[in-house]
Image (cartoon, rainbow, N blue to C red; front, side, top):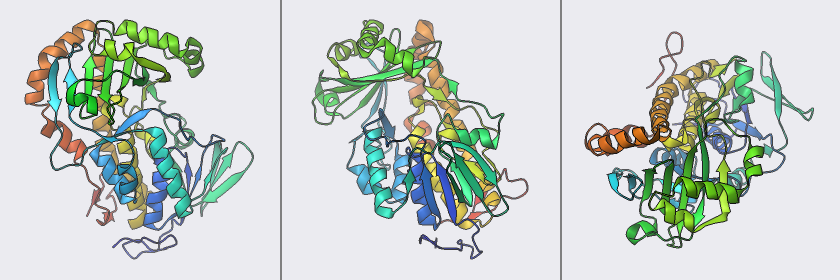
Length: 428
């Protein structure tokens, strides 16, 4: 059985554990989950967040897929997460005119995914950190790290420092930890899409209006997604707008939400039901995401006592629906490795070996979806023609969803070291 205390010094192999305290850089979603998973594995953790204030109320809506829900359940959050957001029904692929090209009904033996605002999950995590006594320090922007024989010291912009056995980067696509591990590491890549979303008082007809399905449509000039709110009061929506040159947040704000809504209405003027949803959209609820980004393959996931988790190393595009789910999976899997392998280098190697193939496959599939969103009228027409056939054959729900949504972490299964160079790990 695994060690579950907060001060244990032995792994499941009975060997003395050298990792007793981890410094986690980044306090969004992956960082708190990482800390909770380490606590379960018997490793102390502290979180250091660059922003001076917490992020209550900030962020858009995302889906946590069944595999992500399973990872969150392992750190004791199942009941809390079930109380927020709304369950996801069938995923419907449309032609932009309301016509259905295909429908993914999900897999009967898996739980339904959940749509939620980032702020809802963030609040759950912050409350759990407080309950478990895990410290999170704000205003701590990492500027450097110095490794010694027995540990690593993180240095922050305010002149303070902290020392632990490991430093874990959960600091997103703009990761400072990634550049410390490898100054030549690739930066996040802009997808060519700008995200805009909000709420509308438009009520979808029938079952769709009660939040029983999520709809995705390649419109005439832009991609549109929408779903009915669970209480039947209206519709949540988002649009991925082709934008060749990335815009800074300042430039996006300068345009103003009223103008962004006007542009959305113009782009979707020929699309249904997007046109009606946007006609009744509430500009006060809108948010923009100026740089939808993905991480290319990162050559080095770790070096010395530093390692990367979540978006800092494997951010797929939003088209995957897997960003949060993969991040929390990786956090839990790294905790398992640190629990079972007393040497941190062996733990990092096993972690990368079990995670890299999965996350890079999902990222590659999502990149192809992004290409469809930016492919123009001809590309959308081709997709419309081939989608019904594809969904019945090589893109069937079983073939597409089982490998991704059906992934489950076996917490009680012992992780064994990677033989040789550390690129072919396995779990025994």
